[in-house]
Amino acid sequence: MNKDKIILIVLGSLVVLAVLGAAIFNYVRGNKFGMNSTEFTYYASDLVGTHSGTSTVGVYFGDNRASTSTYVKRISTTKDNATLLFNVTSASSTAVAYFEIFGSNDDYCETTTTTATNYPNMTDINWYSAGDTIINRTHLSYLSTDSATSLLKWTNPTSTHPGPQVSMWNLNYECLRLDVAASSTILYVGIVTK
Image (cartoon, rainbow, N blue to C red; front, side, top):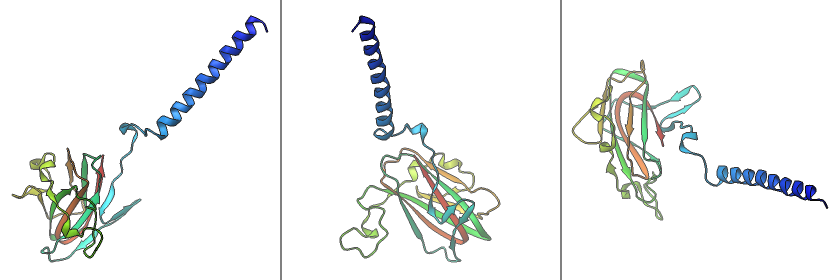
């Protein structure tokens, strides 16, 4: 074999190895290591009610705001930001809504059961106020605040404008819980985490 053929074979082999190595690296990076955080698109998931396509179905809260409904979402401790998106699909002129936000790191914190024997019940989960994580709490345009750190009040909510958003930073919870006490309101709340 002459010297030129050997050089061409070696160079051809190196090119094939380089292409193969680049393909393997890209496959492993895309499948094993995942994507960069800037490559993700974040969509709101349902917390209170449902939203699909252009249809939003809220939850009806009657005339007695003395009762509270609880909504829990597992967000994972890898998520440290969350935004609650409030939307009223219908409300009377005397409507009012109260919200409290809590966080927990307990095992099975997303449970909604009250009769489990092998797992914790809702009443067994330790919840802590997440109100201190709310960004610009005093500057919320539609929600007013009361004295408790996690209590927010929305007086006369209407469906004529987009609802308020409540953003929280520096979260360190496995689950978030939203307690809602409202009257004469049909309410939807979505949650976005990252």
